[in-house]
Image (cartoon, rainbow, N blue to C red):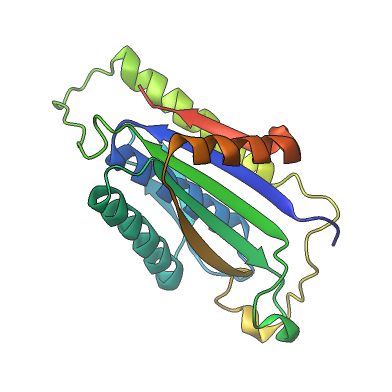
Length: 212
């Protein structure tokens, strides 16, 4: 392997519901593409109209993602004055020498920002068979965002870890991984993080700025 593959996803949303949904889609897509076993997968209908995605049929990973997302929601509602949160997902090479999970080979940074005016409000819409222009714009924006993630997941050439596909320990594993969550107290901290990622490689930054 050479240098770490590092990607940053910046999400600005008016309500926690949309933020949670986009994060859940993102994490499931990432884990699906980092699967090392023959675990079955599921096609999932997103809460966004006409948006589906694929996730692993793994109870452990589903629980892990749900725990992270629920904790994020609790934290955001508990401390509404926070500017946002940084969530980091690290992947590590899977071998006996790496039990302490050091030196990740891939990192996904999620910068999660909510509007302080509507951060804890759920969207309420009347059921309507006819899609509005706003619905169509939202679909297109989410779909474009998903394509960008998949593109980055498949852009690796020479630093993917070597994997022994005959390893019996791979039966229910992705790469070794962990999550880290960090508060973003003020806008100044966010700008500092953003500038730091821009200096590394601005091509590896994906921004989704408030769905319609």
